[in-house]
Every structure is written in structure tokens, then in C-alpha cells.
Amino acid sequence: MAKYQLKEGVVLKPYGVNSRVDNSNLTDTMAELLIKKGRASKEDFIIKNKKQKKWQ
Amino acid sequence: MAITYNPIDIRGVAAEPVIEEVLFENNTINKSLVTFEDDVKAETIFTEASATATMQQFTCGLPTSNGDLSSFDAVVTPKKVMFYQEFCPDDLRFSRFKQSMNPSAWNDLSSEFERIVIGGIYAKRIALSAERNFWIGATTATLSSIAGLTPGAANTSISAEEQAMSASALGADGQFDGLITRVLYNDSRASGVAGLGERLKVVGTTITSANIKAEYDKVYEAIPAEVLESGEMPTIYAPYSHRQFIATYNNNVANFKDAFLVDGETYTFNGVKIEFVPIPENVILCARKTHLFWVTDLASDINMMKMDYIANNRQDMFLKNIMSIGAHVANQKFNVLYVG
Image (spheres, rainbow over the protein chains, first blue to last red):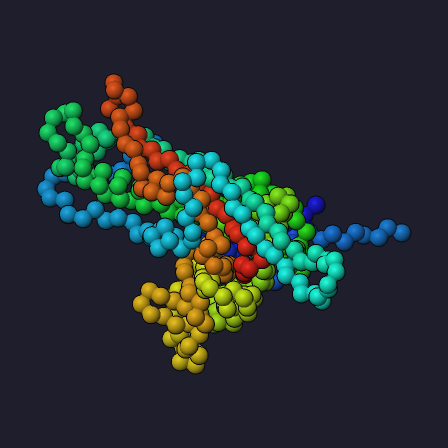
């Protein structure tokens, strides 16, 4: 299951006006790359925490 | 598709010019920025040859064959595509365009509309669409193949940047693989098996007027020395925005002025010509023009538009443009692709 999901209505254009990233073509690698390069911010995403609770 | 028009019934005088939207020029064709391989009806074969010469010690007796003579063929088939629209010229009867219709109720085609909207804006749009698809077109199958590659740091691996750029900025109308797509993924190799392009990979960043020289330095340094030393100089193909970044960079008094030289419409970086084309932001391609091919049946097909009545018993009309178009990249290992 994907860790990153764009918030509703958020569309990114990381490579100019003719580029487009929405939830249909977003991957976790891409999300992390765009955050790292400053072309998206963490606030653009719903970040799902993958940490599992330990049950005793 | 009907004409979309909000006219005012013409009462007095209409201002002479019809204000046209501002469009880019198709410089790839107008200035022949790549090599045009035309007269290709269905398939064309590109042959690449290379050799290795190995010096060895002389022997009086039986010599040993040493070295390598190799070549391979790549077959490129341009895709046949079309632009087609239907419209009813009578929709313009109450507009300014009625002034240029010939007398008689039979005549409802405006010569002004034909000249400005069809022969002007629409024809330009077709040329621009062809150019855009030539540079950044990609089929969904190829995009899927690129997305399936495993990213890595080596030149033999795709970079995460190339993958992100491919997923978000390549595709256009999806009819065929354009040039940037072919640089990234193609079957133009001895094995004929499709795979990652052999381009020289440069991983970049977000280009601005502040760092444009540093990023162009990375591209320049990645050009194989033999490309600069022998014969034709390569060309840097950059997005349109770089014209403004270069001007801003040069306007900063603190910057070194001899890196980017501007002489009228000619832009160079360290003596390498820069051409501005419709490629994504933060992408630069540096290659010899003779390594990049626009494959087509007839280059002037882009200018050929047929307009006629749809049938003899009808008054609505069609506009049709047909062309074949494809892209090919040769000598891949000498071409630099920068993606930030």
C-alpha cells in the first residue's frame, strides 16, 4: 500500500506547466524525490504511517 | 466539432485585426533543429557502425585477428496520425465574418475566417502539436516500461529523476514515442531488444537563473571529449524558460559574462549552441543534430490541410490533416541527458 497520497485537489507540476502528478501516477519514490527537491511539500500529502503496534 | 464563438450581431464597423492568441513558433521545423529523414513510407533502416583497432606485435608467421568491426541496423516506422474537425460555416452568418462571405445564400464560408482561424491559428496549432509530440510524445506501453525499471546511480540504470519526469511530463497525445522518450528507452541497439537508452546520464536539480551556469557546467563536462574535438559541434536543447534564466543570469553584474553568449537570436554556452524547444523544465539534451532524427513521409505534410464539404448534399465542412511522424536517436552513448 502506498505511503504517500496527494490531498484532494492537489496537482503537482514538477517539470513545468505540461507536467502533471496526481494520485493516478504518484509513487512513493516520486513523492520523496519531489519533497527532497522542493517541488512539493509534506503538506501536499497524506502520509500513511507504516509502523505497526507491537502486541504483547 | 462545431465552431465555438460568441459573436455580436454586426451593426457598424469591426476593428480590422482579429486578435489571435500568441503561440510559439515551431522552430524544430522552421530552423531544422534536428535531422529530417523524409520519404519514409513505412520503414527506414538506420545503420550504426563502429570498430576497434588493436595494435599488436609483428610476426613473420601466422597472424592473430585482433580488433572488432561491428555494425547494427535499427528499423524505425513513423506513425501515421491525423487531425480532423467538422464545422458548420453558417454559424458565422451573423458575425463580423459575414462581411467576407460572397453574395448568395449558397456562399457562407468567410474568407477572413478561413485565412485567420483555419489557415492561421488552427494550422499553427497542428504544427505545434506535431512538434510537441515529436519531443515529448510517449505511448502508455513505453511509459509503463520506463516505470518498471529499477532506479540506480550507474549510467546503466535509470535515475529516480528520469523516472519521475517520464511519469509526469512525457506522453503528450500518446501516439508514438518522441525524442526524449526514445533517448530514455528504445530498441536501437545491436540486440534489437528494448531497454534503457545508452545516454550519458546527468542528475540535476531545479534550474533557476541563480544556478543555471552550474547546471550547464554539468552538462558540458559530461559531453564526451571526442564530440567536441571532431567535426560537428553538438547542440544543447533546452526548455523555453532558459532564455529568460540566461538573460537574468547575464544581467547580474556579479556573474561571469562569457559563459552564456547572446548574439541576437543565437545563444551559446562555452561555444555550444543552445536551442529552445518544447521539452519539460529541468531537462536538457545535448547531442549532435545528426544524431537526432524526425522521421516522416513528407515533411511538408504538416502544412497540408484539406477542407471541403462533408458530402455533396450537406453544407457542413471538414478540416483534415494527415502526416506520418517518428523519432530516432543514433549514437546514443554520445548524447547527454540532464534531468533534475
